[in-house]
Image (spheres, rainbow, N blue to C red):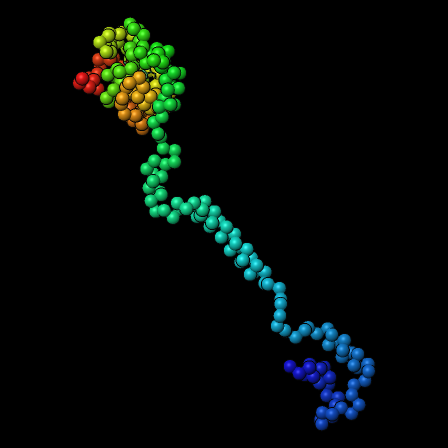
Length: 229
Ligand code: HEC
């Protein structure tokens, strides 16, 4: 735009039609015009200008959303997040899957069982039957789990010797995993050689037998006969 077009003088028509001013504006007039000009806003120009606040807000909002998205969906940046089988593996056992632990079982045995059955597993003749090489311990783990959970009372024959004692329901006060570890230890100590026991099996039996009283050994044998020799 031609600066002259903005000149307030153009509207004043003080010049002749020829356009050529005779003597030009007076000094006072010039000062007045310039002060008006300096109050005018600048012409639009290319260059830097402040970012509109709406865009700033949009940008911050996007950053916030991105942060939320990452925290919620990054799976803690675990590489297994991209393993399609990982959820199945976790569901199958989870990171805290139970492993029968005979070493833990031994400690628990010493704390809960050895007072009667002795640390040697040999028991006390006439009072407490042996667990070492006992057919009650071998074979189906359910027989032994039931004995630990509910206890035993009544006549029992173990390795050719008769007992008539009373074993309290010790397992009722122990966790499934603890009972499983004890049973695993007993089934593998002193020459015993039976499968380890899982905590889920203990939980299953605990649920099935509920709050029953002690087993009579003869009844327990009907449910779980000793293995043929
Ligand atoms: C208070 C003493 C006592 C404690 C403690 C005890 N038992 Fe017994 N246990 C007995 C008696 C007595 C019998 C025989 C029951 C009967 O005469 O009916 C027996 C029987 C058994 C039997 C079947 C018979 C055999 O010898 O194989 C098993 C198995 C057994 N106990 C395992 C355990 C385990 C495992 C623990 C520890 C969690 C334990 N007992 C704690 C006294 C005890």
